[in-house]
Amino acid sequence: MTINVAPDWWKTLFDEVYLTTDARTVCNHELTCREIDIFCKLISINPDDSLLDFCGGHGRHSLELYRRGYKKCTVFDYSHTLLRVGAENAANLKCNIRFIQGDARNSQLEDEKYDHVMILGNSLGYVPDEKSDFSILSESFRVLRSKGRLLLDVTDGKSVRERLMPIAWHEIGDDVVVCRQREVNNNYIYAREMVLSKKDGLIRDKNYCIRIYEKNYLKELLGAAGFTDVNIFSQNSIAGINEADRGCMNHRLIITACKP
Ligand SMILES: C[S@@+](CC[C@H](N)C(=O)[O-])C[C@H]1O[C@@H](n2cnc3c(N)ncnc32)[C@H](O)[C@@H]1O
Image 1 (spheres, rainbow, N blue to C red):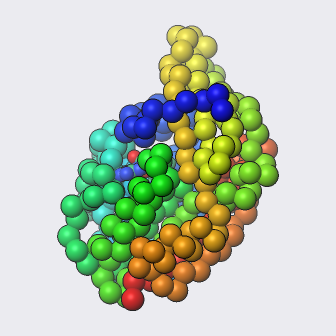
Image 2 (spheres, protein in one colour):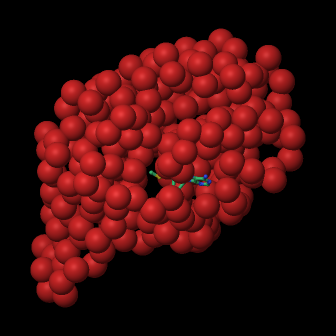
């Protein structure tokens, strides 16, 4: 393995640069609407239900859910920057959404408060140790009411293994180029990301890693966290990103599970 990663990389990567480098996915209203269409077909949400958008970044899913009439949304994330951007967007759109900062492994949220916990847009598997996923799923279980539902949307590990391109790059506007070198090692994608401005030079050069999941492992993990009725759906061609990035956000596993 050649790409080394600091254990706390995820505490600093999700900033304004990320909102540019990943804009094709996370600032793409059409894609967010398509995702919400898919999620809403898999779970039934009542307008009065309280929703926790766990590791929700700048709250793009909550904003769209709110727009569709689901008004009890809370976004929880570690990144101060994303939460600030989300709160500004929500204020501009007159959406009354709560934004809370914290670590999802130990969220300090109230017990049994939510009807739905949603971990969307591949937001599990950033803390590079196996115990953290279990902690985040156990927290999800704890804050759900009895009969509450978890919705989890992660990249399809099998597809990543088959399709990931070791080098991928794309341009943003006339100035910015994002280059990624990637490798799969055991159950993680390791990546080096260089972001360059043609005018001003290097913007960022950072390494990160993301856990990838297969169906059986997810079933075991969710069962160990207490969930029942685990259903896993494969969803292909969701992001519509070009071939260079296929295998990351194009092929997803969408999981529903229940707190008894
Ligand atoms: C790829 S982003 C996706 C954000 C959002 N769900 C979306 O689809 O736009 C992953 C998010 O997970 C958050 N995250 C990862 N691990 C976390 C943790 N342990 N506690 C809180 N947030 C976490 C990051 O801060 C980041 O905003």
